[in-house]
Image (cartoon, rainbow, N blue to C red; front, side, top):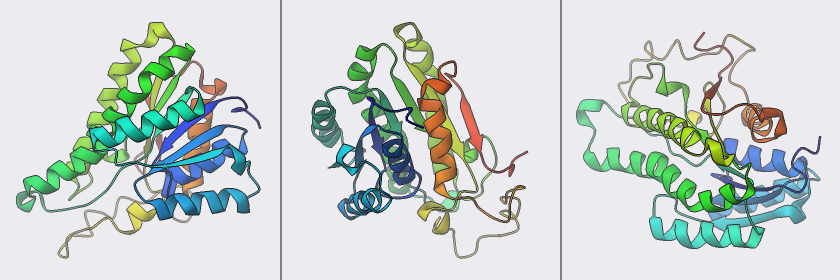
Length: 255
């Protein structure tokens, strides 16, 4: 498939996990991609994987950015869009996951999760909107989570950000619908990534509360490419009539 031929795409969190898999998928489908991440080493890995997989690495640009910092977003995301010569699709995959007992959660901990996941999504989207709106058919794909709608213990801060991102997505989908913008969410769950391998659970976590977080399909968690494929559909013309909603991708964990 070449659904992204001639299309310009920015993917945050593209140095690892689902963001990385998404950047590689869109490259493989002919897109020009800016892969953005705070970790330069992760971006180098993304470039190496693009070359290893035989995808069009010439269509890949890299930029380091701290999405929680307004000046960093303005400088690096702004410059990346200029280098692309516009923007058709924004994928806000960057995020962090950490866990605490809520009664011992500090304000600094709370603000760090909010700052990256929710504020970061806003800052990058705001920076990208003029270019996306200029196309008359721009697409924003945001990252919610199954934790936004289903109970995930010890993850109150993370869940709050993902619920906020879901609502933010609905709001901009309505606000800009008459200008051709589509905004959608993916809500992954039971995906094997760096986040799920090291969620920072408390030492005394009750794993009985977490036992339900296993997929009905297959024999365990799915890989990041599972979500990347869904994002490629949503962001392409195949998803042209989908906006203001979320797609849960969890193998039936929360049926």
